[in-house]
Image (spheres, rainbow, N blue to C red):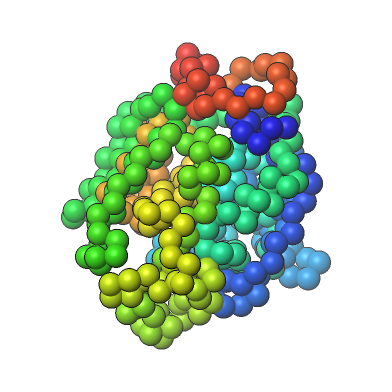
Length: 317
């Protein structure tokens, strides 16, 4: 199928994908295998020990156990998986509904610090349509969360929009804002390559806390007092805010289905993204699940969320 497909039917991968790397926080080797999955499987992590499945963790907001520097999912019995957000962003950004993620460590490999290598691997194997309608979480009422000068919001919208504003004292970043209407094509070209970033002044403190042990210039944009340390510089002039959008897409994937609505974050991060999701699902009047109607396979089509999703879902709430 075409690279830009987004439509009415559920999807999975054409074949399995194997990826190897290290954990950005643990510094330990990490491998994942993405397996095609059946209708209504959703996104699930299978934590393995040799040939045995140690635990199965559904990628859902209920499973979130920590949001310090990354998003961590746990089974509640001592098994957890850290730094899930970039992989989840790639899957949601490319409109993949069903996949089993086999992982042999406690952290998803950081790769180059972005979602680009996940996207490349998915594009290489391809995406398969399944014979079942896609379901969406449709926002019906505004959800507003405020914590000091940090603001998070979800509101009804005819599509899937992300609006993120960041504000850092560092002159290298400063204040940046970016708004996107998410589609697979836009995710590939405008967001997937945006890398995670960190400040050199924080490195020793992070190491002492057992964090960022695998961070390097190969997977992180390192920020000095007044300059970017990476010799190649930035991939986008506003790479920092684009990465925060990528993170938000990954965190919002923990809604369990694609969202029809608009998300806004001001001076937020993983903690705020998940706080907004929790507030949403605590209010049963603020959302509903809508199902796309069954349609004939029309081939290789790229459809934007506003046209292909919200219009046929709007009458089903």
